[in-house]
Length: 452
Picture 1 (cartoon, rainbow, N blue to C red):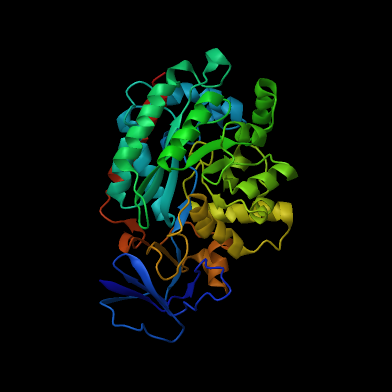
Picture 2: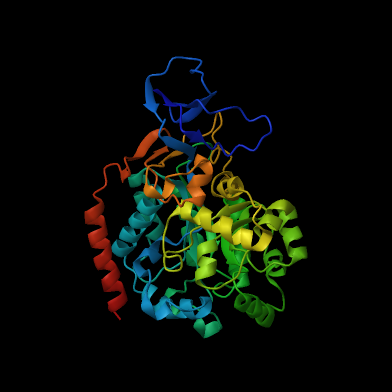
């Protein structure tokens, strides 16, 4: 089957090549892949089976989220941490998260994925590192949810091995034995990791952070990832408290630590990546280590402002992440791109282009996840598209449709396609009983918080 997404109101291809073709006449999709970009006023070179009139839509690549914690949709806007910085926020929430159950986790994952999908996101990376008793199949649960919603995901097998008894932050009830972690990591890679263009589910390995994982676990995980050719992910340089912890415990700064455990590589990407100095930015760029910029969470927890332009200019891939829904407290990608634009303008000035921020949400995020088949509207790429209407009051009077997505605050896509299949139609997820899902999710959130 071939479909022509015909004559859009505007199109953002995210293709920054100087010879990028004109796509103002639309996009042709055949068997899940983009097979033609149509110039303004032209028709497809070969006959198509179907045509979708996109004259009232702005077309973009599907947005890509590089850092999330799906389970945290259960603890949004929780009063005891509404005004806390990271370390107090974590130590207050850990005992709540330690009560997570498989069903609550399933509901949290579905709600997070649904919210992302409705915001134009087609691929999401989740960092799940909380494995209390009974949660051994947490990643398996997520795989099923991703497949049910028809999205793509990089699901990371997170871990914590440094508990409060040994000087870390998490309670002992969520700390696991390193051998258990490594064995489960190998099981998940064998069971679910897909390779090559069009992969729907990929597995990455993700020790949580320097203050919750031992250096030995970091090294062993890096060796396992190299052996199985999968990616690595962790939190790093999110706060000054984290930097102080590394100095006091290991006598080194964040990037020195990263290199000491074998993580200064293009296989790895880092959540937040705020507190790097000039030399560290150069080292990250030279290594090709990626950074997931999480502007809303960074502002919510007062963690700081990442030096995104300098990281990207140094050669480090930069994408966007919504982070967990207990520190954002949303899972919406286009608003995240808007926040990234404005936060970076505060640092670098008003000349930071709108399209550069959209680039972080698309091709930049694809690079961070090691995907060269996503993030750009170009022939041969996967047909992951988001279509946006500009018929709400907030857009009235807007002159540049692409700029309006960020400047006027688009937050919900009208249509979303993943691999050539419509997953959102008229602003609703196909085949999903959303009211029923939300009702059960709200009750699970209430039980989790009040169970203690």
